[in-house]
Structures are given as C-alpha cells and as structure tokens.
Image: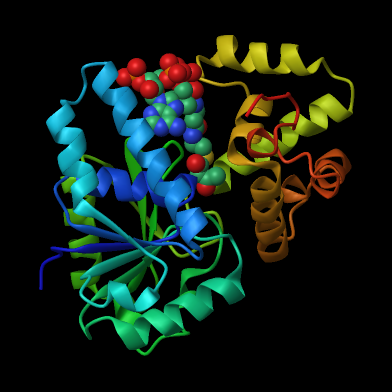
Length: 284
Ligand code: CAA
C-alpha cells in the first residue's frame, strides 16, 4: 500500500493547513468538519490563503484552482472510507479523539493508516481505541502549517515500521522535514517549548519586565520570529494550559506547572489571538 488519498478530520487552523499542503502536493484530499457552516468557513480560509499566495506570485491562478479542486469537503466521516491515510486535527480532547479513531477504524480499509496531529495527547491511548494499533501514529504539524517546515512523526511502542515509513514518505512529498519522536508527553518541541512559554508568563506575573520588553528581549536577543507572549497568544492560551497540564501530570515537575495568571486568563476566555484577546488585543 502507498498513500494515494488523504483524509483530514477537522478543518480549523491546523486541519485546514494540513488539507492545503496535501492538496498542493497533488494528493486528493477529503476533509471532514462537524457542521456545514464550519466546513464552509474552513474551505473558504484555505481558498483565501491560496489566493494570497497567488497575489504574491508564489502560485498561479491555475495551481490555486487545481489545489481547491483536489479538496472535497464532507460532514460525514464515512466519506473518508477510501483514504489511505487519515490525519485527525480536532480539539485536544482524549475522549473525542478516541471516539473519532474508533469510528474511523470501522470505516477505512484494513491497511489504512490513522494519524493524529495532537501536540500532547498520548498516541497509544488513541491507538487503543482501534483494532489496528500498529497502524496508528502521531503526525504533528506546526502552526502555520503551510509555513513551518517540520513535522514530528511519533511512533508508539506498537506502531509498525511500515506505517512510519509511509507517513515519512508523505511528509517528504509535502516538503516537510521529519523528526522522529517517541510517544512521550510533548514529544520534542512542546517538551522544550512549553516550559519556556510558562516561564515567560511567570516572568510577567513576577514583574521581571513588561509584556513588550519580555517579547522584545527574546525576539531580538535570541533571534526568534516572535516573543514568547506573542507566541503563547498565537498557539492559544487554552492549548498551552492543556499541554502544560499533560506534562505536569506525567512528570510532576514544577517547570510544567501553569502560572496562576495563565489559568485565570483561560477561565476569563482570554485565550489569545483566536478569541481577540490574550496578552495582546487582536482585531479579528
Ligand atoms: N498561513 C500561511 N502562511 C502564513 C500564515 C498563515 N497563517 N501566516 C503567515 N504566513 C506566511 C506569510 O504569507 C509570509 O509569506 P511570504 O514570506 O512568502 O510572504 C510569511 O509567512 C511571513 O509572514 P508575515 O510576513 O506576515 O509575518 P512574519 O514574518 O511575522 O511571520 C510567522 C509570521 C510565520 C507566523 C512567524 O512569526 C513565525 O514563524 N512565528 C513562530 C511560529 C511558531 O513558532 N509556530 C509554532 C508554534 S507551536 C505549534 O504550532 C505546535 C503546538 O503543538 C503548540
């Protein structure tokens, strides 16, 4: 089996980005959302993004049209039955992911591969909801998917080498660099990134410096594209808190403990860019 058709569950920021890069790499893609409205908005976001690439001369109008023509949208999971690889990119919730994987397991071909774009949920726990545990893995993209050039490919203690090879071959076609990680909390990037972001919030909370100076110091002092508070807003403070809690529950180390300010901002609905307000304000 080689991967010829890709399914994507979820057409939000991450799922839409994944569908977009797969379509640009000439894979037929079936993308599923819960409601017609969410699906319509997700597909419109992909089309708008491709439109910006046309304006910049990175893509021709024909390439944009061809990419959009390769993407078919659905609200019915069973439309993914012919996909050889399905990438799930829904909300970070173990029960929800297990429900989707159990359903996909009954729908797709026996040798199809199921991958999760999760940044923090244990892949083995998701795989255990299926009867094909050796064909379940992590395929973790980074936001914005069309721009960030790396994918973490996560192998559980039972994922087959063949499934990993197939995922790596797809990532290669998407022009993404693969890094291989074990199924341990936070994989590589979030294991290292999340304590840094939590420490930046602790520095703000502790009055070390102002919001802008913390961001400017790290951006200019370390040559980063974004300061940590801007990046936390970009990722979503709810997602950051969720990943921090997963790491804390597994490792019981202080560095993963969410600062009170973060927890309170999430309770207040100030979850960053997507809500219009986090450490900064955004016009949506
Ligand atoms: N989708 C597609 N392309 C986008 C984009 C998006 N959402 N946002 C920006 N871009 C493109 C722009 O079109 C632009 O392309 P060109 O250079 O070809 O014109 C390029 O990215 C740069 O964008 P801008 O000039 O508008 O702005 P910028 O220079 O500030 O770059 C950025 C924006 C790429 C987001 C940059 O700030 C960056 O790399 N930030 C760090 C992002 C990061 O660390 N992501 C990982 C987060 S962690 C994660 O995702 C995993 C997790 O599990 C939590």
